[in-house]
Image (cartoon, rainbow, N blue to C red):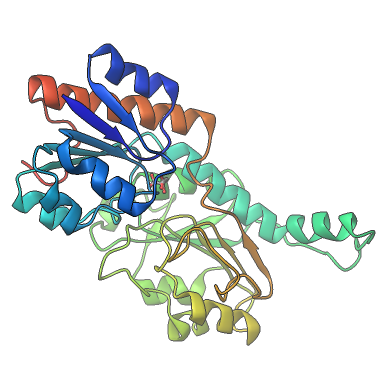
Length: 314
Ligand code: MLT
């Protein structure tokens, strides 16, 4: 059987597929057209976030039985089209959690202590220590939108900084949490009362543009917002305008509606913003973890019909 690996997967993951005697076709730098051609005769397809799996590709992939997403987000796969053809879509929901949570905290600290501005200023010969007065996280209120695995790990870390936590999640209620660790509130209350807001929800029709200009304007003018989840949950043009208008104090963004980002993205020239190029899960540990997990899952499905972390099959 043949497996297409169309994004970058570690050697450890590839070895699992090769040891199981699959014919592995690697195309991590292929164009969408090359990937569309290569998927036509494969039985399994392993991707990260760099491959967009469209309905047309799925329709043309006659032998395809499983699409394995090394990572969490599956907004780059047309899942209804896969389900329609009986193709299993699976991901690795647990492995990136700590890396994403740590990057979120790194972004908050970078914002609150002016680390990025201080670094770039020094490299241009400046010594701005009196202009770059930061603020502590201690006693500040953090609003976590999405209290799933990553949101809860962010909560644990931020509680150790002495922060007060507000949480919003349409699928969770206060009785699932201790009131002394997080107060579950509605989104409006979280927005109005947080000093920092971080989003940890998937990108869906109901979360797209969740933070638009109106909602951003209802944050405290001293507040900052972080997105290490998915581009589009915070509207990019609206965020750039809210920063320029002084509606909020800062933002740290790791994910974008179109990646890679070019200079036409309004966030690139927005004030008081820290940008990173989708680094949330870019750690040695997470990359190795998702590569091994997805290759094992795809192998086990193709050889033993064993389903693990399938998103569209019971
Ligand atoms: C994920 O969805 O797992 C992360 O955003 C990393 C990635 O896109 O691969």
